[in-house]
Every structure is written in C-alpha cells, then in structure tokens.
Length: 439
Image 1 (cartoon, rainbow, N blue to C red):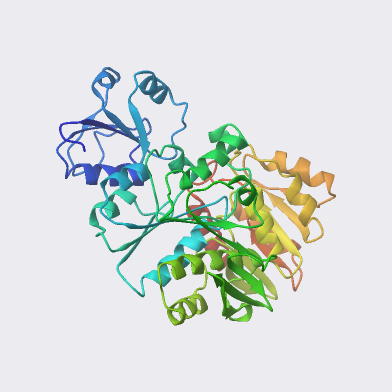
Image 2: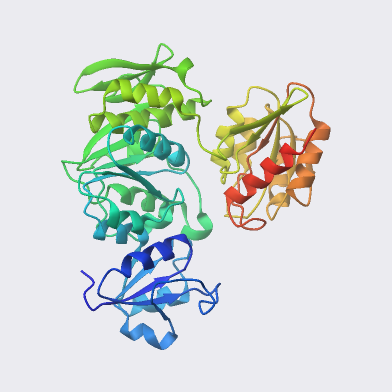
C-alpha cells in the first residue's frame, strides 16, 4: 500500500507517535510536522524527516492527528493539491489484518461502553482496546491477528477523516451538539459521527439508541440494525423491563441481568451496558460470561467516579463531562442536592438546557476557567446560586464550605480542559488529589 510513498504525519502526540512506529515497519519515507514541539529535541527512535513547507509537493499521504483543526493552513494547501488526508483510525483500518472490528462512538457514553465490551471480550479471546480511549490505534493494528477482537473508541475528529473504515459492529450511543469549535456546525458534527456506518454492508451490524435522533436519521443503513432503549420494549435489541435488562434477537426474548446487580449508577449507564451486551451477543459470547463481567464492572476513571465521603458529603469526579449533555447526565445521577463544579475551555456550547433541566437539583454552582462568565449568564436565568473562582483548588474549598451533610460535590465541567489542563484526565487527577487531602 505504501511502497515508496512519502507520508506526512501531522501532530506528534499519542496518535502521531503510534503512526510513526507502524510506518517504520513499511517501505516508505516519513515526514513529521508538529508546530507545538521541537522535533530536533524529541526522544523518538524511529527515523523521520522534519517537514518543511517546500516538501508538500512531494507528499503522497497525510495522516492527521485528531485534534488538528480541519481548516489548518497546511491541510487546506494539501487538499488544494489533491493530497489524500486521513485520520489515524482510517490508517489503522488500512493496515490491520483483524476482521473483528467493533467501533463505538457517541457524544457521551462511548468510553464506558468501550471499556465494558473490552472487559467482556477479553474473557473469550485476545482483545485489543484503543482509539480515543488513550491507546494509539496504529500499534494495535499491526499486532492484532485476523481472529482477535479489536474494540475502538472513535471520536468525531477521527471519523471525519475516514474513507474506507468499515467495522463489523458499529455502536452509536447518542449524538447531540459538541465540538462546534472544531466542526463549525451541529450538522457537520453529526455527519462525522454517522460516518461510522458509511461503509457497512448486510454482513455488518449497527447498534443504535432508539431514543436518539440517529434512530430517525439513519433509516436506510445497509447493515443489520439493532436498538437499545430504556423506554421501548417492543424493539429488536436490548431494553429495560421489570427493573432488568432484556435482549430480544430474532424474536427470542431473554432476561440478562437485574438493574440492582449493576454497580454504576444512572439510566444512561444501563443503556451503555445494553449496547455492550448486544455487541457481545452478536459475537456469540455466552450469557454467563457477559453477566459476570457486567456485575464486576465498576465504571471508568473520571466518569461519575466516587472519590470519598467526608462528614456526610460525597465527592464525585466526572472530569470526562466535557459538554453540557454529559454534565446533565451526571447531575441527574446524583441522589442528593448537588454542588456542581463546572467551567473550562469554550467549545462553543450552549448551557441553557443544562440548567433548565437541573436547576432543582443544583444547590450551588462553582465556576472556573474560560467559560465561567458565559456559564454564569445561563445560571442567572434559572436563579442558580453561583460563585466564580480562579482554579480547581479554590473551587473544591468553596464547595466544601457550602456543603451540608447529605450533599454531593460533583466535578463535571461541561467543558474541555485545555484552558487549564492538558487533558480531562489531568484535571480529574488534580481533583482526586485535592479531595484526598481534605479532612
């Protein structure tokens, strides 16, 4: 595929380094571009050429890191020259021999669904889990064998630049507004998510949320379509009935697990679990294995993660709540009056709907970061008591001083972390550290 080709890797973060490692095993010349790093000082073993503007005329293919904006000057010039631009997801698909690709996307819920499905499948066969979840896809792509399982968390950024990507099973948890700063419009964002199904055929499976807009939009998929639902039990797929998860496939209905046996809170998590169960059933995993894995699953770090209880006040880390819909789900999962810590990098989100639906549960709102003032304007409309602070340490201290026995303090920023932290993981770890030192 890449014999004697000249390939440019844009961005030398996790995905770029993974792509470089894979390309080092192929007969091609590799150029690297990263405007935020001095590549001469980077500790990288693989051979590469540092890209210069005049090299563009020689480039055959660009592998773009997901975070680079599509209107970057170099990408605009490349497309004008008809140079193919792909994501690491597309590249991994092109070089892997693995036939059992399961891809999960969605505005929220994809990490939980990906992690649980990986836990289930690892009990059956060699299973790789990667993508937006934090492991570079290109390394895995070469290592995974034909009959292994390859579970991929796919972001809209990665899907945007796919052309031939074709998973055996594609799951869409649900889709709403997010990353408008990157995609420029809601329609562009939604179209990117829907590309997960673009190349599927009648041998493949699509798993959709029956309560999501995608169930209405995607009426003409070529793949076999199954649904999951918390409200409708007349579907082919997974649903809630009598406080339990049931499956109906080819007209045969069976109970899988009682809700009381699931450790992670919230109806949204029950739906994530349904999606993972459906994929496992398609792959012919025994019920006993599925049930045991679900019962033992305690969720993922930074996603409504219980940290500590101090003097009757519970602290939860939902740093992965990087958009208003995700934070809405987290607040609704709280049992007690909620003191919400929010704010961060501005992705162009609207916060009105968040507070319209949660104002009765939020007793106080602590705001920080780039969006603090913007969020406060939305909070005012719903008479929510708010405080502006400079950093997360001050936010936790303020929340602690306001809290009463029985309250929950929830970090769920509804925003990305990039104005104050390198990642939502770093933000969540800082929250853990601050809370751990409280007495």
